[in-house]
Every structure is written in structure tokens, then in C-alpha cells.
Amino acid sequence: MHLKNYVSLFLVSTLSLCAAENSSLLSALKQQKVEIDKQKNELESQNLKYDWINNIVGSYSYINSDQTTSEKKTGLFSVTIDQPIFKSGGIYFAIQYAGANREFLELSTKLSEQTLIKSVISSWLMIKRYDAQIQKQQALIANAKIDIIRKKEQYENGFLDSSFLDNAILNKGALEKALIDMESARFEQLMAFESLSDMDYTTIEPPKFMLVDEANFLENSLVIKQQNANSIKSDYLKKMTISNYLPTVSFTAGYYDSEIDVGSTNTKDAYRNFGLKVSMPLLSVNRGRTIEIRKLEALKAKLELDDVKRSEKSEYRSIVKKIELLSKKGQIALEDYKLYESLLNSTTELYSAGEKTIYDVDTLKNSKETMKFDKQIYDIDIQLSLLSLYAKMNGKI
Image (cartoon, rainbow, N blue to C red; front, side, top):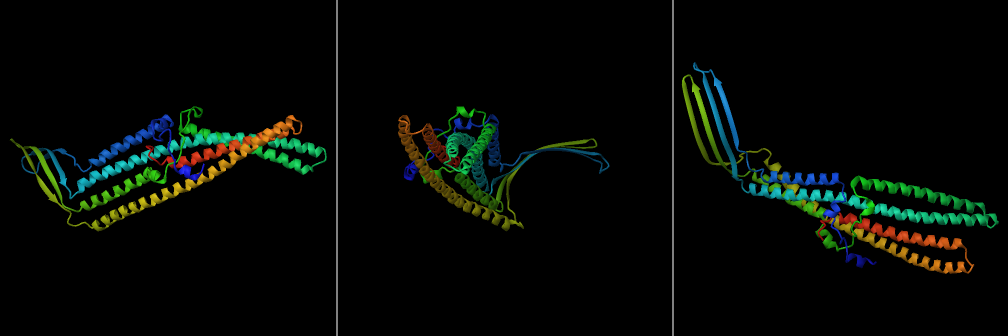
């Protein structure tokens, strides 16, 4: 398929990577950990949202003093509050900061979840890739064995030097050792899958990834959304910091209940008070530096956002190019498969006529199979490439 046809599609999936179906690919333990992270983020966000509200303080004190000739006992119970109601915009900025931080945490958790799901699907695809590689290798070994038989006959009849037979035997041994390595690598991928999922890999069918345009990818990139939330959060933190050095208006109130016992005299008193208080730091040694730090952090977050956008765009284009090249290789494998199929048909006819040997037929049959498995491998590699991008998207397209 030509690149233009790929660019018209992309990452459109039969399942959303964040949908319940794909989340269920994770083991029960992994799902529980993700759910705990979500609940923790929600609670922390709520705490931050109302962090500007001060505590209502209750206290009780009892003092027994013999400072005077008569013993003096004093008991005091009080309930007080000192609550800022205006902080030169600081309360508004605090609430907005909490919202931006909540979005940042949610995106961080979603990215972590999708990374886990990506690992499950990647392991599944790699198992399928090794299956194709192993079957291709078995076909190559079958041809290597045929090559040994032919060279052995030619050597025994004096048509070949022993070095040709020796090389054929060494080639078969190398192919068989490579097959063992592939089987070992496949088992490792299977163990990786089972460490992440409770499901039987033979019973699932992950989504089929296809292409959308670059703008759609960038619009739905969780990495960009996360960095954007971080930039907004840093900006509100800067404004909150500045407001800490501006006038604050607070509401104060208290209830007091006291009892004083001096000798035979007992006095009880209960009263309330309330009012407004205006306060502002008159001198702060670190004021200028603290504000400058927050300004630099906000500026850095904006620069990081631009940098992430550039990085995501570069990664997208790099993978699209990789897909284009893999597609070309797949097309070559498909054309070679058709060529071997044609040769196999004609050779089978010649074998029936006694003009070719069964070795000729089997060699072409095995070679045709290797092309089929090559095409499968290239298709899986395309899916793996798309998966690395799709795992970064919000799964809503």
C-alpha cells in the first residue's frame, strides 16, 4: 500500500486502547493498582482544591497556680477560626491550580495504564511474530536438508568438492541453532505476557491499528495534553506565589468559655467575637527570588510544551516513514510469493512429466512459504510501530 493511502488512515481501531475491553487485558493485580492510583489522585486533587480553607480550632486549657496566697484554678475552652476570604486572587488561583493538577495526574495515570496495555499487546504481537519466524525458519531448514541430500549425491558422484557439502551441513546447523534461539525468545515473550495478563493469549484478538493524519495524532496525544496541563499548573502556581505577598482579608471569629476559681470565689464567663483582619507581608527576604523561581518554572514548562510537540511530530513522521518502508518490503515479499507460486505450479507439472525431481517441488514449496511468513512479519512490524504511537493517544477517535 502506498504511503498516501496509509496517511488517510491511522490508529483507527476496533477497540479503544483505554476501553474496558483492553483494560481487561491487564491482570487483576495490575487493574487494582491502576484503580488505586486513580482513587489516590482524586483524593489528592480534592485536598488541594480545598487546601485554602483553614481549620476551625478547638482548645481547652486548665491551669492551677499558687502564685498568690490563694490557689487559683483557671479553665478555658475556646473555638476559633481565622479564614482568608480574599487573597488578591490567590484563592481563585489555588482552585484553578488544583484543577490543572488534577488533570495532570489523571493524564499521568492514563499514560501509565496505556503503557501497561501497550506492553500486553506488544507481547502478544511479538509472540505472533516469533510464530511466523519459527515457521519460516522450519521451511529454511527443510530446504537446507534437501540441499544436503543433493550435494551429498553430487559429492558421491564426483561432481562437487567436499567443501560444498561441508558448507551445506554447517548452514543447516546454523539454521537449527537460530531456531532454538527463536523458540527461547518466544517463550520469554510468553512469560512477559503472562506477567501482565491473566488471559490466555490464544483467546484474545487485539485491535487492528490503522492510520490517521498527523494533526489528529497531535490533537489526541496524551503526552502533549499532559505537558499542557503541567504548563497551566505552573502558571497558576506562579500567580499563587505572587498573591502570597499581596494583601489578604480574613474573617475571624471565636467562642470562649472560661471558669476561674480563686479560693471561695468562682467566676464563669462566656463570650463571642468576630471581625475582619487585613494582613500583608511587609518584609520578606526571599520574596523576589521565590517569585522569580516560579516565573522561570512557568517559562520552562511552556518551552517544554513546545519541545514535546516538536518531539511528538518528529516521532510520528519517523514511524510513518518506517511504515512506508515496511510496506514496500511486504509488497516485495507478496510479489515473490506469487512468483514462487507460479514456479511451483510449473515445476509440479514438470515433475509429473518426469522432468523434475520431488526435491525441486519441495524446495519451491518451502521457499514460497518463507515469503508468506515474511509478509506476515512485516505486517506485524507495522502493527508494532503503530502501537507505539497509539498508546500515547486518548483512545477516543
